[in-house]
Image (cartoon, rainbow, N blue to C red; front, side, top):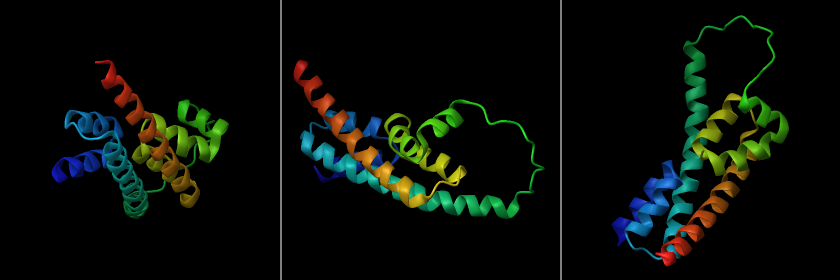
Length: 142
């Protein structure tokens, strides 16, 4: 049983969308799935935040500065960033694409890391609660 819980937590470090169904496939309790996926998700947030800053510094050492082109930023990410800011990037980004991606984009946009971590952690908890609940009641329908 311990190996199953650790597997769910390890999967949640990278992607919750894989961890929660795996927990139900292992026939774990929804509470155990929730706690393991939250634990793994929060570990993933902090690992991505720590490594994201280190990777940015490593790349900056070897990268030649590009001449600035003055073109307006376009694309979906910029529109979301302009509309929702740090909360959108941390919470909504975590709910949709995952915390590591949100942290990576936030580091690229030079978002204050402490604020981003708070919203990503909140997004992880809400996402795990939502998908564990949906999975639990979905399994009862079968």
